[in-house]
Image 1 (tube, rainbow, N blue to C red):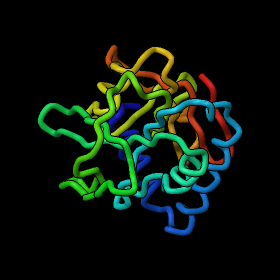
Image 2 (image 1 turned 180 degrees about the vertical axis):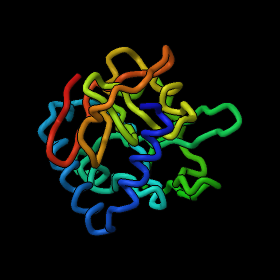
Image 3 (image 1 turned 30 degrees about the horizontal axis):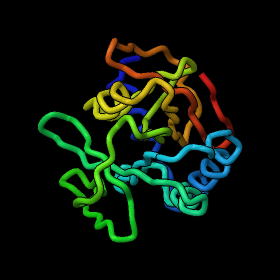
Length: 187
């Protein structure tokens, strides 16, 4: 199966989810994350969900991170070179949706990529080897390739592993974990 076919398949599956289902599944994912031994780090990068794409609601994870007094990092996307700039999320951070409905910080305290210990990653599909399918622009692959080797890469998915094989390339960065509402996959 090609990545574009997988994108179409999983976007359709997401569209079928009700708002209530998304909330329940997102809470289950956050609760599953508590089982991982990852809470002794300092800098946690998280995505703010694109509601129109019915992404995992990361508000529950944000609450966990805030409760554990962690440094929360969010990004701003540059669509000219498909890069991301990372900012510390603080009480004074102003968030605005960009042209693609991605909630982003307007400005703030910039955080360098090597400072980041854990990255929670949005995705559409993943396989049993830790390969992921995103939206196809390569933002996360570029970002993850600049992280320090010990940075943990954790995908968040409403759905289980994709059984169909899909192509990968040398620029694809694999996950260390993928957390679904029912299972934690370790690669």
